Amino acid sequence: MSADWDDLRVFLTLAREGSLTMAAKRLGVSHPTVARRVHALEERIGARLFDRLPDRFVPTSAGEELIDDAEMMERAAESIGRRSAGLSDTARGVVRISAGEAMTVLLARHGPELRAQLPEIEFELATSHMLANLSKREADLMIREQVPELADIIARKLGRVAYAIYGRPDVVPAGRLAPEKLRTLPWVGFDEEHGYMPGQKWVAAMLGETRLAMRVNNWLVLHEAVRFGAGLSVLPCYLGERDPQLRRVGTPIEEVSVDQWLLVHRDLRSLPRVRAAMDAVINLFQRHKSTLEGRPRPAPAIA
Image 1 (cartoon, helix red, strand yellow):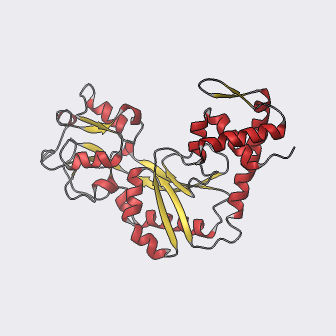
Image 2 (tube, rainbow, N blue to C red):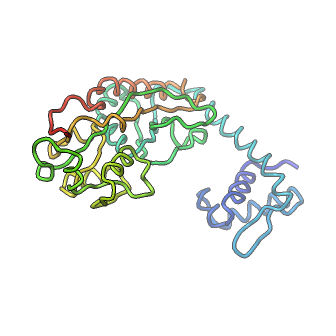
Image 3 (cartoon, one colour):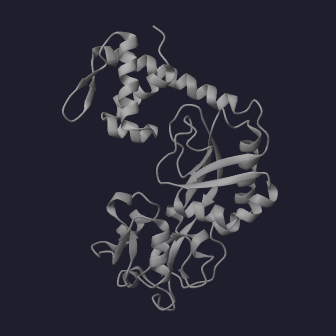
């Protein structure tokens, strides 16, 4: 039996998704195409691969055995795809960078710098809180605050990003602000699902039993809420410092500052266009180090 990889890929997707509809959506094909491919594979193998239950498809024992082999073929196909990209690669084309929304804004602001250095490269910025799958080339590069424990991922430290309290001047009283005074002011922060975002634990500890005036799930919405007077919040300094409508309270919060890492799959780091984009991003962070670290900025201080 010689199984077609396309049929195996459809089989593997259906085994993971559990329904024809979800598998078709994942593969970008029609519902009948998934059913036809799976049926053709079953005919070729001579065994039933799924039990068709009312609400889902469940792999049979034969299907379970095939999953391991199909996953091995998937990894091999992905590796071939990554390596073959470099056979004729030059420092031109598309480089996709995945980052959180605030970091994506930083890259977008300095897009002209990046394009001036690399006019033959088209930078594609993808905003996501989730890790892109570099093995599947969902992105060429990622910028993240932690280095994930994933095989074949190479990490390069970009620098440290500072966070501080910001608010509109009409919301932030002049003079030194003691913690007890800060607790009387309205605050904006992330919802519980995004409580892992930098600064959120600090805000919760500082406020104690005081509730937030507004909760969001996106840095850019948080920034907009603060700049239009919904309350104070902890923002990355590279967002707050550039906004003339905001006033910073005190110095950057040391315990909130975080490192930023540039991540790349080891099979892609030597590709000319990816290597050139990596160097450009690293240089960008070095040139704007003072802004990223939030210095200097005269402002009211926390007592």
